[in-house]
Amino acid sequence: MKPSDHTTSLPASSLTARLGPLLELAGGKHALVLGGFSLVATLLLAVAYGLTKEPIEQSALEDLRHSLEQVIPASIHDNNPAADTARLQINGVPLLVYRARKAGQTTGVAFETSRKGYSGEIRLLMGIDESGKLLGVRVLKHTETPGLGDKIEVSRNDWITRFTGLSLGNPPEAQWAVKKDGGPFDQFAGATITPRAVVNGIRDGLRLFASHRQALLEDAPK
Amino acid sequence: MSQTKDILVDGVWRNNVVFSQMLSLCPALAVTSAATQGLGMGLATLAVLIASNALVALLRGLITDEVRIPAFVLIIATLVTIVDLAMNAWLHELHKVLGLFIPLIVVNCLILGRAESFACKNSVALSALDGLAMGAGFTLALTLMGAVREIAGSGTLFSGAAMLLGPAMGALEVRIYPGDGALVMILPAGGFIVLGLMIAAKRTLDARKSAPRRQAATAANATSPVATAS
Image (cartoon, rainbow over all chains, first blue to last red; front, side, top):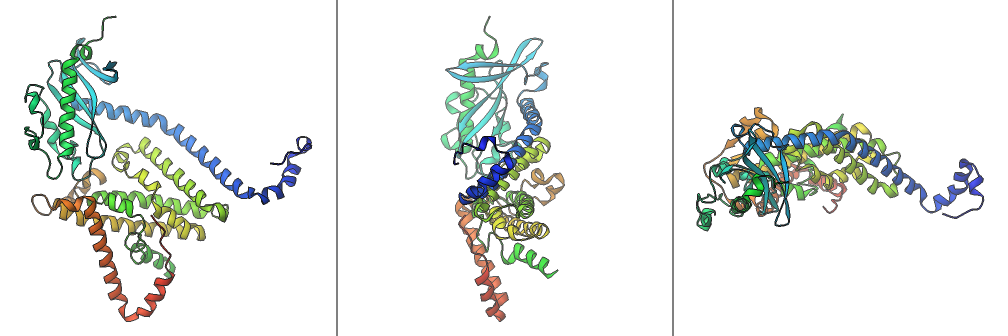
């Protein structure tokens, strides 16, 4: 914009009148249209974000509680595992642990683990009791091929439920693999990579539990 | 009234987004590994398209020609983002199922294509109708492709319909034959094969129908809008 020594003292209307032709020349009208649209769009998005922030957080919490309920049976705890959390550092990686307690005693834990699947990360939530036995595993998020790899979702197939009750010694650690790799777990027709990733992910989670059992179960003495 | 009929026939069949305009092929190939998925993407797009067409038509007086494309993109992106946020907040169950498709709609050139070639030149009512017709055509194309791929590839039809459309639609879920089908059909290659076959089928049908008045058909083809790259 051309600086002018008089503009500051002039009323706004005559300022636009003076600058009008200049704006027109520089395509300013289009800039104003686009700028106006951007402004309105930004405002609308800000309002929508503000209005929806809380309900979205609520539903995310609700989802988490629902997933936790599936991997930690109600019979083993009298607390709310979604709120009873501990942030640990395992080998430099942060890990959020949900603890199930009964009468103050830790009876089990749940935590997330992830593994690369056929197309992107597969995030698992696994519940393990204090002896290292799997209470349940659920897939939280994945981007596997619809109709093929998505059989790992409990709503589509009960495949994921067969891990309940297993542990690192049952089957033996070396045999934690899909049938194609010599293990006892079924793969799906046409999809080996996805179930393999889930089996390996669960095995990794069990290993993590075995090697950091104390830290996962109990808070470090203060 | 004949204009209404024209818009409807154009959108659903004659000038079908996928089979004739060859627009939005990316989502058409990506989500049609099962009929339910195709239907879900189609319905989500249909809803957004009606709203975006109406909005663009409403604001068409304000938008100057030179900046119309960025303005349309802005309108569509804002609309879709708000729909995404609102669904996540208040229709959370539905969002969990359709949520996957919604970001795909922003980059869907069908929406921008209709804003550019129809909504910015027509009234709000006609634009909404065009959105309905084009969206219905898109839904039809995706559901058809999904159905063929699912039957050939998985041996089922509309599996997971109850999850997407509510328990009442569970009756749609059918197993056509036991066992798994030809795996290639649910992989990306199957998408291309089915798309190719369906385009060929539509052209054959159209040619047969218009054979007696080929002259008219040639003229109509020449004036149909040129498809932009997807």
